[in-house]
Amino acid sequence: MKKLINPTPSELGNSPEEFIRKLSEATMIVVEGTDKSLTRGLVTLLHGNEPSGIRALHKWLKSGARPLCNLVCFVPSIPAATIEPLFKHRVFPGQRDMNRCFLPPYSDEPGQLAEEILQIFAEYQPECIIDIHNTSGHSPDFGVVTFEDSSHEALVSLFSERLIITDLRLGALMETSTHRCPVVTIECGGAKDSAADVIAEKGLDKYLNHSNLLELEHGHHLDLYRHPVRLELAPDCIIAYSKGYVLGTDLTVPSEVDKFNFGEVERGTLIGWLGNKRGVDCISVKDSQGFDVFDQYFEVKGNQLLTAQPLKLFMITTRPDIAVGDCLLYATAESEHDTLDT
Ligand SMILES: [Zn+2]
View 1 (tube, helix red, strand yellow):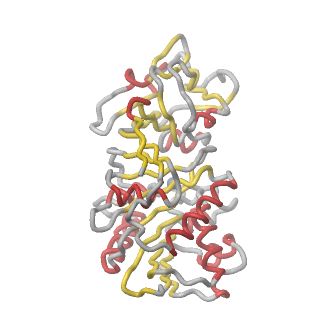
View 2 (cartoon, protein in one colour):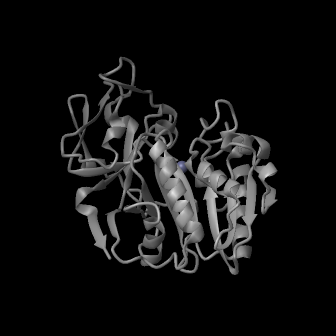
View 3 (cartoon, protein in one colour):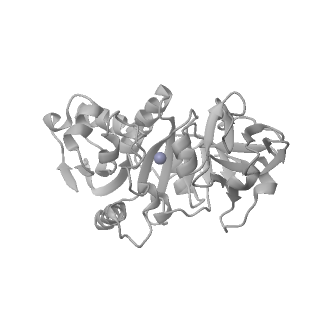
């Protein structure tokens, strides 16, 4: 892995695009803080199609500012991000999703990179780690954590007022979180939403400059959503996005389905039209235990796939490749919604 220590302006290029082209491979960046006794961790561009974090980091590095504490930072998926057109590829073709690799065995290339990142973090002992992402569809900002406690809530609050607490285990970086070093995922919003870049910039600025990051400030509001499930599609599922059912598809999803991200979704909301050959067999909805919970969340009427109860939907993708390769959406029951005011 490439290493940059206290990068100089000439190493940074004039734009985030120039910066990642110059780097060309997975890179570790270390910036010395004013207080050298404390270190904070940052990861971004684990997914090559999610640019808000690297844009914010590049802008901040260019400013020449010094962080309050040492910063240890990883930008892993530069090889995927720099395939033309830039920021299109989530993963490098033929490789596993980088944010599914933080679990042994670390046998393949992305697995070995994940292991190296974890080893270096273990040496530097940061007090916390944030991992900045975008969603592929339009979406408001939110955070995802695997532990529900005030330090995780405080970290997410730097960026967002929405928090998902997940018990799904997929091999994501945030799953390595501990009480000694909380790790959170920040979803800044859609990869094509300019608002997401602003969320990343403002949050990163706080992350690098605030003391007591792990204490939830007074007067903060958080919307909490627990126990999400994933709506996954069979690997050979033929999917389209359109205004009505597209002949020959197993599932057609309304083009603007991402408008439901964190919106009001009542029972009976249309999520898609199923093909008559496979019907609902191309879809699975599993909880964290691996049990099929389709019927609790969705129902089928005729060829329509509908929600079966009021839900919060998030990470709804409008990219067919991501819908099939990862999942179409996440859902939590509105009954799992809670608020926290400090
Ligand atoms: Zn991501």
